[in-house]
Amino acid sequence: MSQHPETLSWHGTLDGHVRMIEQTLLPTEHRVIEVPTVEDMIAAIRRLAVRGAPAIGVAAAYGVVLGIQHLHEAHRDQVLAAAETACDQLATSRPTAVNLFWALERMRSKAKSLHGEGATGAALCQALLEEAQGIHLSDRDTCRRIGEHGAALLKKDQAILTHCNAGALATGGMGTALAPVYVATEQGKNIRVYADETRPLLQGARITAWELSAAGIDVTVITDGMAARVMGEGRIDCVIVGSDRITRGGDVCNKIGTYGVAIAARHHGLPFYVAAPLSTVDPKLLDGKDIPIEERDPEEIISGLGRRITPEGSKIYNPAFDVTPRELVTAIITEVGVIENPNQAKMEAALKGAGICF
Image (cartoon, rainbow, N blue to C red):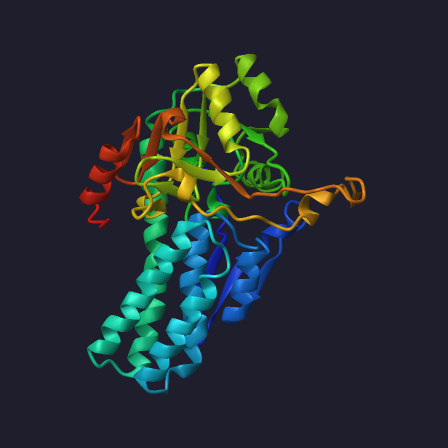
């Protein structure tokens, strides 16, 4: 069985802390850091020490616990106020990943519900830790089920192309886009992976390649501009990517460059799959044009290879994500099954089946 790294975990009891892989240092250094405060968690999310929509959701849930753990002897009113403050602070860390807001709303609702029932401050604190751990365990199970549904789409000795990193390091489990690869490998299908390097922060080259190599899976790194050529050479059988937000209409937001990969896949007649949990679907949004796109520091493009790579005074545009229209998506692989040719009706049916209101 292929092994995959654990990106983050809670250590100790209520007075414990989070440990996570510092992903900004990969692949040259594998360092596990401790995150003891909500402020440290916000900083870790912002600098991409932890990244990937599901992992950010788990991290945010634990961040709420870090914000209230010192109040276990306080009145429940103080605990609720601190939990609300932690949720508000964590919500500012990344604007695009909908799992962040989903997890924070779940933590907020739990706090309000127990507070209304008259729970003590200590009981409220303990319940919030258990809720965060439940979110983490649920994500592990969700990733496994995504992997099983996705692996059924893969045949022996096939090669997939993936963009960015949607593996174990982007989730609380075995990943989303890479989960089918892990499960198919367990099934003896001998899957090979081509990983786009994913400019400007090279999550594919740094993280996906590192993760798959550590698991003993055949991985080849290519530059983003090579994807269409590699498809044209017949080296790719399908594309599987993750997502940071999916609309109720089926449009998919993912790392910048995904849209171009989808266009190339359509031109070459290749399936373009998106692997994501239903928690990544934003039931409030119908059109991908309404997804808020994070713009990151121009320095990510200005400098590279240990030196400045753009001329002084160059204008920089650095959106972190793009939106792939549903028309280019062959199917969305979720924990409840595969949604083929996604549209509003099919997405709403899946949400209703999972008890998600919109």
